[in-house]
Length: 245
Image (cartoon, rainbow, N blue to C red; front, side, top):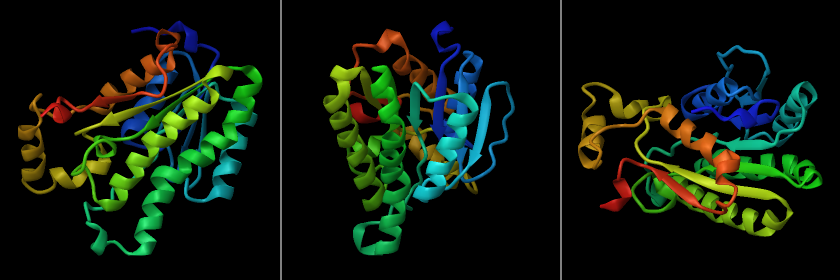
């Protein structure tokens, strides 16, 4: 699918070094967009119109510097993919200390707030901007993560809805994607050893398989495009039917 509208636009992606974030970077580059790719690890990608910025999204000062460096290189983003995130080991609340709780929320939730507030003012001046925030099926039901991850992903959905409500009349759109079983490095533990956990997850998914990151990136392209201009404040699962059970 070709979205020629992305040519000449700038996209910002966090969590760009692997998994869904990496697939999003590749998808937008393939559509002719310029991409500011932010991750705490080096982003092993090349291409015209790519600005790689190494920063930990938990570090507000480093993240702000990375965003500004990317803007200096490629211009202000019209599209933001808040994709950076991490799991919490599926730990219940009594197994999580305050430091772990704060780390998960800083990575998964607060980073989205920081990126959004850094980019939104320029979008409002142009009266156009799109946010595609990464939630999870763990933002809609229990069991997709532990207490901290589930709390963070539920909060992302609420934050995205409020973001859209507050600024939709000024040309801003904000939506969430809620992935289920996606074959990414973040889920590598499920494939360890004989892959028993990965096989179980596939067997419990109505589609009977894991998805690839590119499938989430394809949805991102649509949600960021003019074809989705009347889609506001939604949560779109990419879960092989997990939530329908």
